Picture 1 (cartoon, rainbow, N blue to C red):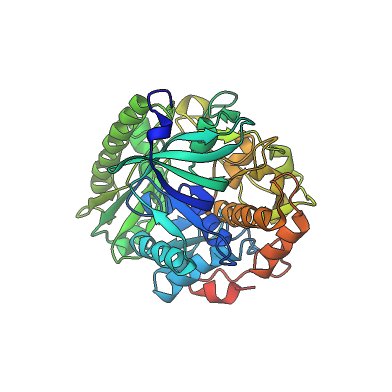
Picture 2 (cartoon, helix red, strand yellow):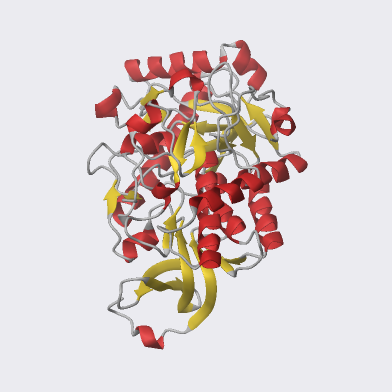
Length: 459
């Protein structure tokens, strides 16, 4: 940081493992890193609560189950603990997905904020909220030795032996000058979405009128006739964990660099404009919505991709469709490629879907979770090493939680073994994942995806 005399910045903490970003990936990374209670773990978050996309934007975990007529549960372990805690609070149920992503684990996002608090506190993770990563410190060999953060208390340094970048935008890697691919460099970047929630919806009337199929017909008609300036001909809405309330994924904002503050300012405003355009459309055109209103917008606009690191291995579209198997597999993914495209690329801004053959699930290798030629840092979440297409499949939150668990265990194991990311004994990592209930081979038996079926899917 050229504007700061780094030697005069006070040291706030010295820890074993620093996790940047307390989204679902970062929280699971911190929980895994603290599993043996042997290591000091600090989890950094710029907002006032943990959870990232899981609490700011969405209310459903996808990726736990493969889509299709014979769904399999392909994620377990630490991610299961999160859903179990929600289940104990009667704040979760399983629901089918209209567009074929598979059964979703729907939850109350406000309750999830508290669940993340409780899980992190019980594990002994040190959580630092309202604190933003602004730079890194490196030694003469270019190894990261610490970070610089800013909060209302000013600038501080945090030193650590191992680092996990779960920032979503690969911020830690960016400040360390680790090579990343920026969304849009090679393929059109996925669009951004402001989600919104509406209350006082007569869901029975909506279903009697035709439900989701009717909604798509009404949206397409509104677009074609020009009666409502909707950004797309389709979109989804679903009941929430609150009577008479629905949540949506419909807004579509294209051509935005999520690392450009001016572009993001315009995107946030456009997302809100579109949300209220949808409110007007739903109230005027869709049965069951005449007396409904927006009661909440996502905490920020939802970003699907920004920076992705170049790891020791890059997951590809071919890996997804050949149902790849890897010796260093640390999680499974059966989610389809779900590419939210700009209107010019997809016929008025529709989503391109491509499904994994035969309802199967492919391996995600450990080598996608750390940058090429680095030993002190791992990545988890949507900044992991993948091409645009593979990323559009493997960015579901169940998978990002699985990545976090693998990265957290790997960082802890590297300290125990006295090795770096590249030399880590992967079989030991896989054993540790299996001991905590992770799924590393596609299950043979179908999952129970009935609304109350969560308890029947523990492995």
